[in-house]
Length: 187
Image 1 (cartoon, rainbow, N blue to C red):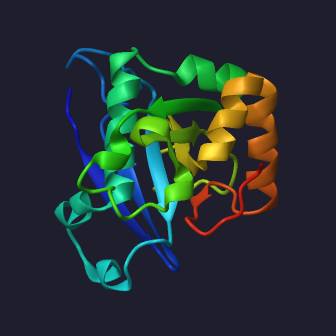
Image 2 (tube, rainbow, N blue to C red):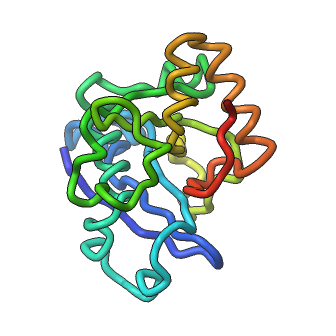
C-alpha cells in the first residue's frame, strides 16, 4: 500500500520508476508478493536543468512522473497486470484526461494526445531494461511504459493484438522502450 517512486539517472536519460508495486500486501506475506512488478518511464525528453535535480519531488511537475503514477494507479485498481504481461509480453492502456493534468499539459506534443485528452501507453515494450541493482532472488518484472501517438492508439483500438505487435516492432527497430517525444509514429 506504499506509493513510492525513484529517479535513476543514466548517462543520457532519466528513469522514473515505481518503488512499491512489488511490496508484499501484508507484513507476513512471502517475499515477492504484491503485484510482482514495477513500472518505469525512461526518457531524454526533459529539460536539461532537471538532470541536476536529486529529489523525486522535482519530477512531480513533469510528464514522466504523471504517466508512471497514473499507470501505477491503474495497475493497482485492476489488481495487477503481471499475468497479462507474461502471457502477451506487451499490453496497451488508455489514460483518459491525463493530457489536461498540470504536469502534462503543454509538455507532450499534440500528436500524442487522442480525443478527450487521452494518452495511450504501451506497457512492457522491449528494450534494454535498466539495471536497478536488485538482488536476484526478487522475482519481479520491470515493465516499461512508452507513450503512443494518437494514430498508434487508434490503430491499436482497431487492430488490437496485431496493432500492438506493429507498434512494438516499430519501437524495437527505432527507440525501444525509450519515451522519445520526437520519434516517428508506427502508423
